Structures are given as C-alpha cells and as structure tokens.
Amino acid sequence: MPKCPTCDKEVYFAEKVMSLGKHWHRGCLRCTNCSKVLCSGNHAEHDGKPYCHIPCYATLFGPKGFRG
Image (tube, rainbow, N blue to C red; front, side, top):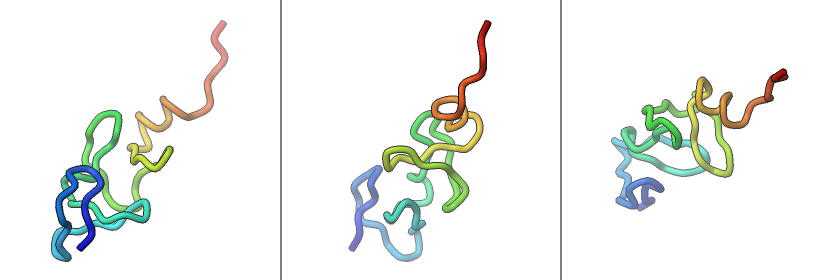
C-alpha cells in the first residue's frame, strides 16, 4: 500500500490522488508555500514539491521584473 508523502499514512484507493508520481490523500495535496488544497494536475512543481500556480509559484520561481 502506498504512503502519502505529506502525512506518511497509507493511501487507500477511494481517497487517493495521483500527482508528481506519488499517491496523496485529497486533503494532503497542498501548496508548499500557502497550504491551499490543490487538484491533481492543476498545480506547479519545484524540487518535487507542489505549489499553486498563482500566486506562489509565479512569485517564488517566475521571472523577476525590472526594479528601478
């Protein structure tokens, strides 16, 4: 039985979400920065960790603007 990367508990078929090549509980797949619950396939990844697209991933890892 696969274990959830967040809580390290077993993930049963009825509650699993597949993302980033791992099995998660629905409530455990959260943005690493702001803890927003994410949907499978509708988020960004950096160093194997999930992030919401906007604002977290864009702010942390997106292109930086010119500051004068």
